[in-house]
Structures are given as C-alpha cells and as structure tokens.
Length: 241
Image 1: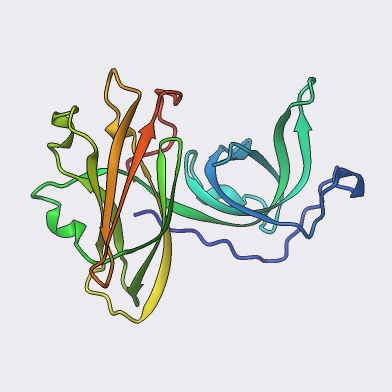
Image 2: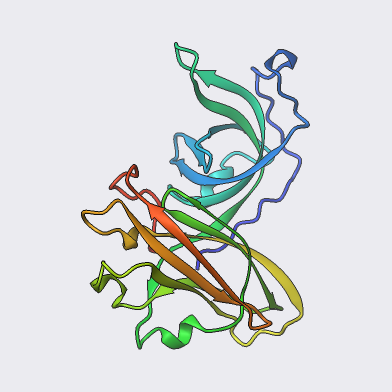
C-alpha cells in the first residue's frame, strides 16, 4: 500500500505575475477534486477527473513540493485558479493554479483471489459512502472503524472470472483487512481501482457488479458498465501498487 501523503499548509506563497482582478479569479476561491499527476523534474500537471488540466505555478509548499509524487499517481487536490491558457482558436488548454494542499490517493488494480493471498485479503466489514467511475478508474469513498493499525483495501475477483467472457455481469467484491484493529475511530478513506484487467478483446464494454458488506451485515450491491470504447490501449495509471 502506498503511503498517503497529507498536504500541510505552511504559509509559503509564490505570487503568480499574471493574476489580477481582470482575470475573474479570486485568491480566496478554492476548488477540490481528484485527478492524475503527470510530471517529472522539469514540469508537472494534474489531469482532473472532469478533464480539466491544472498547471501548478504557485504553492503553499517549498520548491519541490511534488517530489513525493510519481508520474501517474492518483491525487486529491485543493487548488486556487490564477489564470488560464487558450489556443489560437480560443479553446481552453489548461489552468494555472496555486496548490493549497494535496493528498496521494491509494490506487490499485483488481486483485485475483488465490490460496496464497486469501487470508491476507481479509473479510472485515466496510461502509461504501460514495462511488464514481472515471474512464477506467472506479473510485470509492469508504468508512471503517479502527484505531492504530494499518488496514488493507482491495477489489477482488476469482481467477476463473475471465475464462467465460460471455457470462456477465462479473462479480467483484470490496475486501477489507482490519488486522484485528480496535473499533475506536470511524475513518474515511478514498481508493481508486483500475478496471483495465477486465477488458475483453473484441468488446468495447463489460458489465460488473460490485458488492460489499457493512458492520450491520447489510450488503452494498451495484451494477455498472465499464465502457472502454474510447479509452486508450496504453494504460497510464500504475496498476501494480
């Protein structure tokens, strides 16, 4: 599991020269959203779930604030828009932003249950508070009880699921290993799962059912369609986390 990096506001502010009252943006306005970080030592940007592209030019962090991030990492960002860039035809290309805070979000692929990992996957209760699909990513807002131990979250399928592609929907299950932690604090966690391993050659979509069980024994069950007709063959997010 990747270490979740929590942004801490420390009062550092770089003033962007293009930001003024005529831009229509205020330094007091903030937006929060999920996206994919794309960057290296020379440049960085965040491609948001709604397809907006953010180019950080200011930050509440010292220089090198993104050193903890790798290209393709999933992030939750709090940002302020400073200005925007358009092409010669007036189409919006990206926003110049100040990063107020950010968190790295756990991102994984769909895991197959095997005799070797069945015990470590766990079967503890989990609360599905919200979910949404963006391209190939299925994201969840989850809640669970714990105290001071590391918890593990996975979206799992049986190894035989893809051997009969005509049988749909595919059943997936959210699994939680609480490591025998105490039920003292109700935590909230965000996690995204890539569904790319469910693609079938010759098809442009598959149906899936995602299930989970909460602390009262109530089952969450939701059927959805993973449509990859217009998605690239090359997978950008790292699915081996």
